[in-house]
Length: 158
Image (cartoon, rainbow, N blue to C red; front, side, top):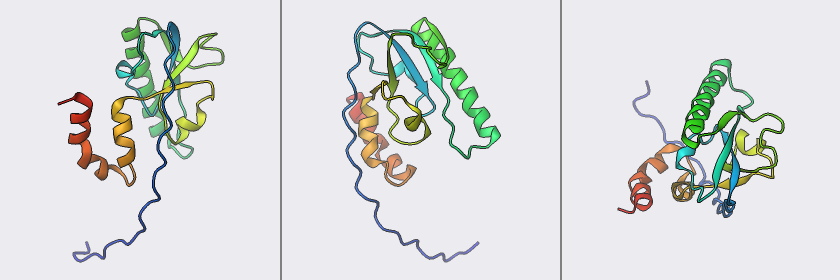
């Protein structure tokens, strides 16, 4: 191990574009589409909408190896089971026509395989902590980690 490593020199990342506003959640019965970037549907800000169907979208990273794909599948299965119980409705893979004529709401996915795979007719919602975390997510986890107490305080109102 090198006990005197040289510091890595790199340019500052370009400024982040602000996130567009989330879509408004429709009233009445809707379908909820889960994806691998957000498998915590119980905490989504859904207002008075009533979830009557939940679908799961598996969009793996293109170079994901078999055990990562398997872990993704297990995580999605767990989220679908929890969502079905929480919302009291059917939950399963998002196959062709799974939502019928219902409006489809999905958690925010800013970039990556899930974001690319989402249909343009999906309404995208975010939590307060998503808005607070995004500007800090420029260089991996540690910049976000340092802000977690502030994010929690702002989110929880303490």
